[in-house]
Length: 580
Image (cartoon, rainbow, N blue to C red; front, side, top):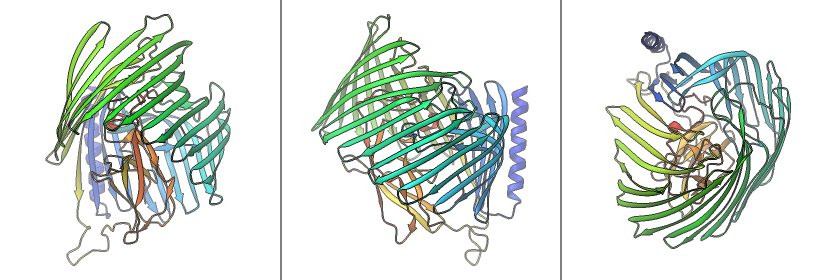
């Protein structure tokens, strides 16, 4: 009865919001309605989004762990500021976060945001809130009073200052400097307090044509928090972290890394520590790939060693054959081993078939999968070989990866799977549709006074793979907004101001299966007039030799796909981004 009442309440609230927006003088409106169920977050619900030239908002409601939750946010332009009310998703990144680039928390209240060419300011007051929901609905549970002030300023072409301040029961005050002496080199330092505990971090990030080196050292107490709001979405790097990739030529690459992680396995669980080391070598000769990966991890005092050998060959661009051998040893447990063989047959650009043979625990298993793509329907069934440092008894595991999308009569139906940090496969099912209000877009005698005009500045470019071929489905975050490349590798972002914008490649949000890394991409871009814009060139690479997700909630593997971004624990896609 409670769920039926809640659904009726949501429907009534959505109808009321619809009527209010429909009666408003802002005529050009786009509505997005979506809903679904996720076993990853133990949540089900739906949301209504609205977007117009000068405002946008979201209303979400549903059940999280059996309890009804509600959330809403609205953003509107007022002169040069953006006014915010409701549950805002606040990005709390530091320039020293070179290994973890997606830290978010929620707050409920009101705020103001202002961005200029060389500086930006964000102020928000209200209460902290625990995020509850999924990618298709957002809700929050109010916690404690809070005041937030984020500020950053470009001091020179090479030096940038960041300030992150939170006044709550425990104070947070973190100050950062980022220095870019060369295009290929940047270094940063952060110091201050996080929830009343001391914090210091320094980072070094360099990338040339042959060598990429990322290193960071974080000194923080075990109970350090950026803000005392629990979230399964956020992990923290701890102590020393380093990752090196060396490519002497196009035929080989070598990788090595050390990671110290703090990760919550459930929403309210304490942070668990994990240390992960990896070494890998990858070789490519004509149509043949082969390599080795060595892994070592330690969780709760238990050490685990893992080894992976793989080899793959492509025949006439139609058939791919891949073999993997995995072995692991954890503490006093009996060594585990697994052998997999994959036969992939590419029938056409729209259809491929997959057969997978696995030998583990003394038994052979045969599984089938493949991929089918049309304009209205796409489906893929693949298998991931993942390394889970928080499951030392069986760190190498094989998981089913399913992604299905169907577009019927303006409604999109989706289903996807993902591997949780505890090794269990979780599922998400959802439905999305768009409704448009065209009145005001064009008048009877041409564009009217209240019509919607496209912003005149653009950021455009092309995404290529390491061989120079166009790459579709790449995710790029421009000024906080996700933009995807199309089938020809092209992407386009519009904005109203001629001001420098942040530019990031988001491999965890890619729409195609695989584990990817950016080889070439700018850190910032300058929008141009559409008829004068030049292309930005982005190069990405599939990392075939790393069957380990160094972030425990983002596993990946050689010859295996990563679950659709719909189910990746990141900032919910439906959260409104800053207005332009």
